[in-house]
Amino acid sequence: MAASSNSSLSGSSVSSDPEDYQPPIWKSYLYQLQQEAPRPKRITCPHEMESRPKYYGREFHGMISREYADELLVGAEGAYLIRESQRQPGTHTLALRFGHQTLNYRLFYDGKHFVGEKRFESVHDLVTDALITLYIETKAAEYIAKMTTNPIYEHLGYTSLLKGTMVHRLSRGRTEPRRVTFQRDERISSPLVQRTALKDTPEKQCFYEKIHNFKVHTFRGPHWCEYCANFMWGLIAQGVHCSDCGLNVHKQCSKLVPSDCQPDLRRIKKVYSCDLTTLVKAHNTTRPMVVDMCIREIELRGMNSEGLYRVSGFSEHVEEVRLAFDRDGDKADISASAYADINIIAGALKLYLRDLPIPVITFDLYSTFIQSAKLPNAESRLEAIHESLLQLPPAHYETLRYLMAHLKRVTQLAKDNLMSSENLGIVYGPTLMQPPEQNALITLNDMRQQKLVVQLMIEHEDVLF
Ligand SMILES: [Zn+2]
Ligand SMILES: [Zn+2]
Image (cartoon, rainbow, N blue to C red):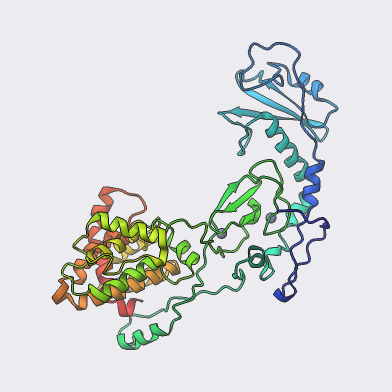
């Protein structure tokens, strides 16, 4: 990404009207400062040094005093050397001249050189980065403190146009789950009325919030923050990068970016084992396509199948379906001509749900659900489960709602398929609910509640969702 030539301290002039869109003006003040930062000057030791560790060069001076090091460095900004500590022999100190004084850092090596979080291939790189950071953060402290106050990110359409996608980062909304009450004399609408109401909710759009998947990143060549438009300084680890949508920002700016990650399909490699919200955002669907497609297929030709979801299909075939989804997404062929045995499709659906990195009933809410199921009073139990459901992330909630409506229909044909809500609770309990810490004892203890939660969600699907 190239720098704009006419950037200024006063900031960019990005219009908020998409019609008047102008390319963002990257602010180059910090870039200029980086160019001005003192360069490292290695002060070498003229003597042969037997005690020199093999990972240091002639900048290693052995056990010289702090004062003597000071004398060797004086007068040259960026001058540095390494000495062995007199107080703690065997430990090393990087002495660096900056701002007309000598700064001393405890220097470590474990295959890479470091004094803080950042790790470097060479001491020279470490010093280069330290001088840039010291120079910019001293000289531009006030500027850096204020650089996030008028972020270009807030201007509608900026990022979308930049990335060439049709997403408006700021036009967000969220479908809130409906609240219902369980008090008897309140007008709980009949299942029929509720069903009609459900049909009214838009199925196509998805407005789910998703947090960015930021990881510390080393950028090759100059890069600018897509939040504040300022240069990302330093030699390595200059900022963070979202591996789902590709957004690049300063570490400090990452805390201010809204939860509006729009994953890029090209970055989402798989369908199975992909975070549920990430997948639906990437495909712009309400629910994962695996869930919709498998349920559609099962409702088409498998509802009467004896032992549906209990009887397992050939695991190689289930694995084939998984590969097909990973490869072809919503183009995967799961029709009767490809897989005549419906248990394979049922198995693929269960596998998808079981392999989620965060289960449909999230780790965070696991114990809330388990505790709900332990309540002795049937009514407060339902109320507690309902409250817990409302706390689920929207994509998880929508998936569960759809699945439970389907399982309810399965139980309505129990005389053919022999699957009661209790049977389905046994099958789906551990699939939808996994404790945050995998512990055989906890899992065993909770099995009853896991089953009960699912059983109750199926039986009371019409009022719970
Ligand atoms: Zn992102
Ligand atoms: Zn920034």
